[in-house]
Length: 312
Image (cartoon, rainbow, N blue to C red; front, side, top):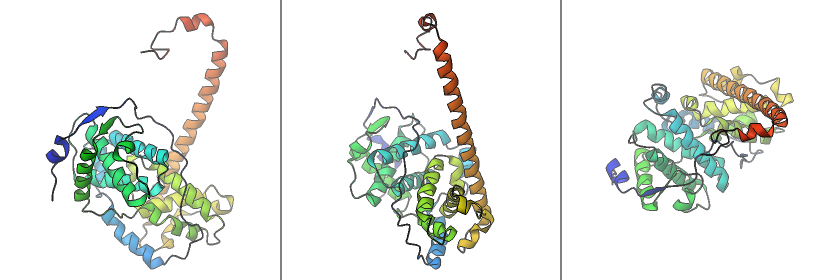
């Protein structure tokens, strides 16, 4: 059975929710991987590297954002909402990443109607619902799933119709290859002693999610993202930072691309430095503001306009 866009969107019944998507920081990500399980068969990992091309958008997906035929800010907001719900319900990191993977693969293959933003929200809900059904032992109802910061609320039947459309577009291939397919193997390759594997996995998971909103990263396949994240995590461990060399990462397994790993690694490092600089700047601004607050006179406060005081 096939579903058209008219079938999917014609029966939409939604209402404005009072909650507005906020730019909250990412919640603490925990890893459920067994850090001592390093006995992977390299042939299996090489097979995943060979197959990952079937679970990513096409090579020209990034160019669609660069040409603005796809809206990068709309994608960023959708991913932020997915991460917010993942943190609220305590879903596994893999659930959130699969949601984003489904969303990107769908957007590459099908164009959403150009309206006021609700189709993208509906797609996000459907992708998260499908991923949760794949990975979570307990899944909230479709209405509860939308309760955390959703701008629109959709009837369950509408979400289910969108789920079928997503399944059709993805050819029912939901068991995707993600960076988490590789991250433990790469951590063990970088630290054969196993002393820091647990930290590497946890830190790499946080690094991956701190970058998943950025459209620039859709250029890289899961293996490259996982390798780059593990390398960045290793930089934070004195005993490992001295041996971190992205040039050697391709030796971890056959099929890895040194060029892509290096480019992804540099992109993550640049964003980490930028984030650190922004945090330092914000901290300095806050201190200056608090110092100025101390010298404010009451008359100055009375002269504030409603806009300045945050009153609409």
